[in-house]
Image (cartoon, rainbow, N blue to C red):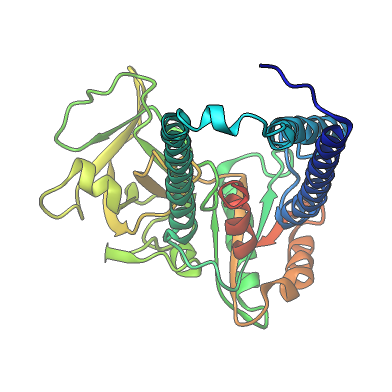
Length: 373
């Protein structure tokens, strides 16, 4: 039997519906406000200029969606209970017989929804916890170097003023010597590419005593050019052997190379790697001379974390026009920026200094995406 709702009942429905709309609207407005504040805090914490595709703006579309969600929530969770509550209770006697069965059915349905809700909440909680733990593990992972009190900058020697490899060597060696005597500077080194950046690669590296098996195009190791003293500046651990030496590893000396621990574990898992040889293979008829391994250093984190094996070449034997200078300082490294610029300007005023930043800033920049997540 259908029972029409009276005026008093409609007032109850309207009152409950207005109350539901009010609370839903307040919740949506509060969510938008907290979202805007949280967005500003997160964006301000990012140390780099975010790419255009990474957009966190709260625009009119987000506001309309929040408003529609608030109205829909109020109608679903306010109107239906209001109609049920306001329905006249005229047939209690007729419903008494079936009350138990209806109550049991509703109880089972309610239990099902509660169980589903708890299960979904647990899945979200577990997924969020695993992601958070992964991000924290990534942030806390040992990068393989010590970034404290290290100033870095990048310079490029122009080909017009320095046409050959010997001219490049004769520029960098005296420059590093002048930087070493600056007050507050403890150690100086240089590298073609800094940790956390994209290291250079070669298609194939042939360890001594093996036959090249990887097809062309499979990159098996990073290739980094460094100067003597570079590993000490960044605190990269020397596991065995000796580092590069300007006198022993000059341009006319036998070719030498340093490999990292991952390279040894992959290619020479047994025996002593010191004294073994390798060569670079750029193509079927393009192979470098044999290079003797003189040192093994600890692994360092570069941008391509899947390519952990690395080889290091001495700048004296493989001079590079572009180098990143690294200075270990006794205090705040940023305080030496002007002094370092002056020394480089005295060596050649036409060579600009770019990417002047501390190693701690570089490491922080490399982690901004997982931190933002």
